[in-house]
Image: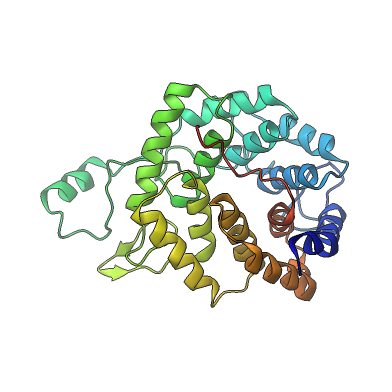
Length: 307
């Protein structure tokens, strides 16, 4: 099936399912009837905008109403502390043009955040005995954490890089550039031996960790404007993993990833459509939104190449 035919036959039902799962407050939760959260609502806003559907203003209003005074976002109303999901909220509000001022406040907060390093005694041991460590990574490289004042992980770092790269005019340029460069180095430092990424490290207790397709696709989306062996190995690893994995989440992220790298994503898009027809993605709103974005004409996760 052609790309146009796939969008016609599958995109509309996916967006219909996403709209049907929406909460009464204008946001989205993990599934129908679940409390709205920032991640699902940001992705839902991007998906509706990409599909040209009504209802974006309600989703934007939900996000703006939940922005904290310091510019950050909590993941949801139950736990009001700042979280990684602010990257997606800022990206959604800025990329759709719904509220660039709120997006800019979010990016300013994001630039000032970084993951913590090792405690001093662990750092000292790492320096004195580099061959006797439980984990293998460069502790001097800090990306972004899931929540403030905790360790850096691959996925929140990748989402932060996407927000800063996709909205270069809304962030403090010099500070953002420095954080982007260090975040990229951190991601490349955490790559698994054969390519691709695990959640946070490549080796623990002398055991090589296996990469995951969804984490690898997110990391490669963040590195879409970079080349080099780490990126090439990651793309090769993602192709290998997709030969054995058929989840909607992995296929949606892979389609977005290959499109961002200007590579043929049609085989993954076709499998994504077939997966929806077979399972409906079990009603998971995050997957529905990402699938809609993967099949739409727009590219909300593609950054300007000169950013």
